[in-house]
Image 1: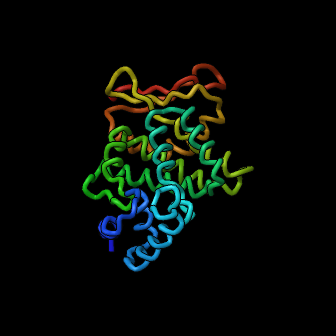
Image 2: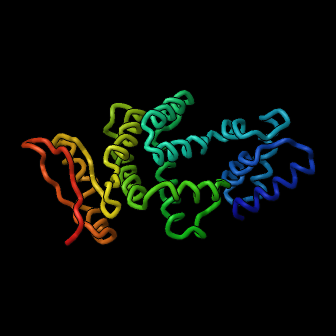
Image 3: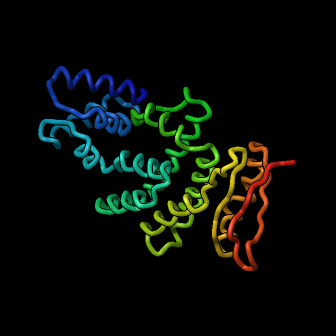
Length: 245
């Protein structure tokens, strides 16, 4: 049974019983039930007892031990706004709850997948979190290239976590890497630039994460070619994109 049906039934039951609830809490219960209405009802009874007569989002999240989906949405919004300060502030707020930072990155990668689907086939976006409209709106704030790049960096960052000194710093570095190598639009709206006042080491990471696997896609999608031209020996000041002749 899909979460939508579960939430619809729980809404009816709690309304009949006069139990106060947050709709977002019902979506948590619906997802945790994994399609079983019996499990959903059992979890709802536990949530009412846990919340002292009400079903609230924070209480259900604490009871289930699940990551608050709203934090993942906040991270995605910070990426959309290219707001580094907000991005790190959200991680700091998450850290106060002692989360599994690997699970945070997994959830963010999953959301990036949903955003990619929303851009390509809006009707195919799942509503398992009850946030379909939010995902569709958020998808319009990213370019398709950004989402593909962020997803790739997220997946690679997940694998690198085992080598990091701690999981929080690994998550932060992965998020910062997403924005550090984000393609930017030039003044000429027909081209894209890859600006990275960077050392050769940073260029090497850019080539590892982006150029070999995705440049062919950019060349297919955009009427331009990428020209990497050193500003002076040993330092790459800027990568420029010029229109195809």
